[in-house]
Length: 141
Image (cartoon, helix red, strand yellow):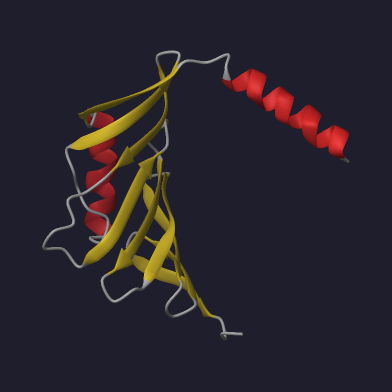
């Protein structure tokens, strides 16, 4: 087992050194902003921001993340990531009351689909265009 772990670590290390990864704080692209605007229309807890940190591997965007000034907001933590194809975003936030919510939002055939996991209520929700289509509340163990 140790040999496999060592071999896997060696392979991962050599692959990671093969790419040059850089980050740049930039204005959101037109397609990124259009995604954010469309998502915010149905889900206002996903905020709009004009700045983004893009992660590049060999001059190609591999990830994008937004960070926010949380002063005066109802959040203690807020992370938002945009996939390179600008069709999906991942989010996670914690309210000042300590409730953590996370999930993803995808644009598919013009519809905005959201999965939401709420740790405080132990609830799973799937929504389409701002309307819940499936909600399940799990009992806490």
